[in-house]
Image (cartoon, rainbow, N blue to C red; front, side, top):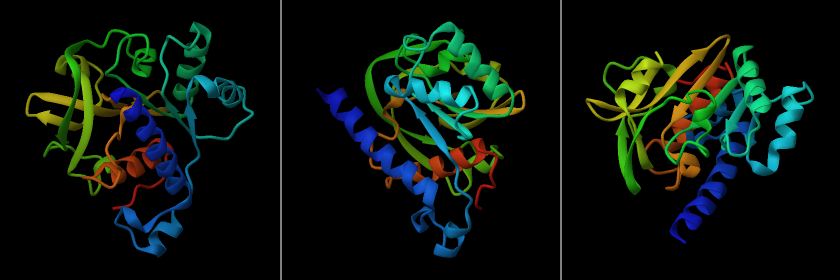
Length: 222
């Protein structure tokens, strides 16, 4: 029941957040003029119900520039996984999630050998931006609150060659971004619950603004 409630809350928060990302909002620490000047980023949220829309995108019938991939190999055929990887490699942007299991994590589409430590149950953690991280994705971001059920092992994250953007300790990174061919990829360790807490808490909301703009190859506000 608790997980169902979290999913519902995430769905509502996400829908509002994506709407704000598309139209601009001064609540990201931007002035109304700065927010209005932002070019919209079109994000396709892929769930089990929107797989037909994903096919449209991959076949050139949709002009979204970013995929928010919320389903894993359990729902995506091998052909579809290959096509998604090729689309990103050709210049698209994708947000993937780890943290549930190998069949439901969308991260498994790109990182099938990612290793995790199982925490048994969902836990709320505060992740912070490492002091040595230099990426526009963390502009105006310091702390993010998230749920984690499986911790990605540090060596697995480091082996991707990505830029670590969030960590819960000096030795435990949890999120990263990277170039993928001509495209871009961002990884979050939260399953699709993030942000299960209201997006206004901590810097969750600003992180999402930055992520989607970076993935869509649009300038990220300072």
